Image 1 (cartoon, rainbow, N blue to C red):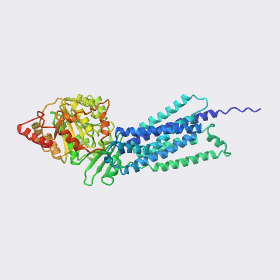
Image 2 (cartoon, one colour):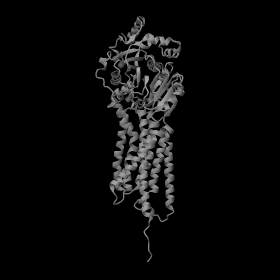
Image 3 (spheres, helix red, strand yellow):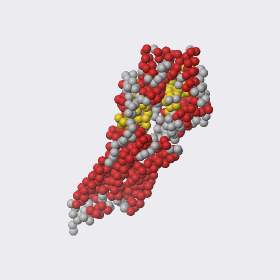
Image 4 (tube, rainbow, N blue to C red):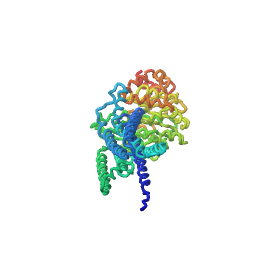
Length: 610
């Protein structure tokens, strides 16, 4: 009797097939979180990068996972031990990712939508929710279905269920972490969101192929199908055909992924209303933000970040940016070391740099792409500040930089992104202002930009009230446009004392300070009286208006919620008029000769409409 030993390869084959299930679900997790990172960036441009937008996208993503998990559980029961179902699910993800890429890059930016015509932010949230569902839900549902299908594909009779589920969950989580980190820190900045989404389609196709071709064992219906074929040579042929078909389909889907539209990077939620108006001369994606530069037919340059114009060579914007920089260095007695928070177009930093008394200037900028872009396109307007030998660009979050450096400054100026941009409100908190004060030398000052446009009365109150709570002797200066409220410069002194207008005027007339005087003249400010004549109020003037204002603190970041409700509002002049209605000439704030103070009083009263 011939002895037939048991085949030793079967357990190894089965183990190999199960291992590939773990690889496939890890790749699924990688594409899921990678895509969520990309879509959050793109939809934040399209909706406005508020905390509400992030919440909407996350809610839709989790909803899809829940729906998909329910569907996948039913499929796993109907097709037990089926790796084919998991493979098909991964292949369908290729189409879902391509769908989302087309929607965000070639379709939705051009939908005829103007957010500013809505009467209630709830209406805009409803629209954003529907658009998020349109983009995210198909793929999220398939990722949700993949998890129970993977469990079913890897399950074996008598297996420890807890160990199985834990292993699948761990593989999926590890893949998700790798996908999120690789996409956010490497892929998008290195090759852009278009190529990143193409890579995700390729990874999903690979995951599906692993299940359709490589992962079968004797408990799989695909094995039974093979056994029913009498010609073994057809099996590799079938695999080759499957690979060719899937590869061709994935390749076609990859080709449909559109490039990121420059108009979306530049104008975000208003992209459709700007099509064909301004020329987009640069568009790029960085690690933390997407940046664009546009030029109007009249030759005005705009710097775009977070899907909107953040700075420009328009007179009203240049006036604000130069005022912010020059007030920072003209008020303190000896501004040798200055910190600029946020590079932007570099105009404020440039205004700081032309003061000959400034020996060292540090620009804290979180996005590495920004200094490179503005040094090329805005050097004419920012005095080529990035290349200035006394200027150091420190790539870091400004808050982290201040919390970790031991350096102290004679002046700090802050020009962060709009407070409705998720995370920006941390640079407007009471605690942050205390950190800034702790890094001031005696006599040092802090200046802050506050916008009135794309904001609400409650949000502006919160910004001003929080700053004046940290700097009780603080002063508000206004930058108006055609006599209408536009934006503000807030100034706080570590050791409050009167501002000597004559001393500032003497500095402006000194030959060594000619660059400062020229810079101010370019924004139609020709004297210290005109500069300080932009006075709009201080805490005592604004007590009535600030009544009930909510302070922005680290523990609640209330400003980002208040500002997020007003990003589509244009009520700047109404806010400004309410703010200054009780403001009067500030006795004791300024000092100088009687003639100088008389001229200043007249200028301020004229500015306040008194």
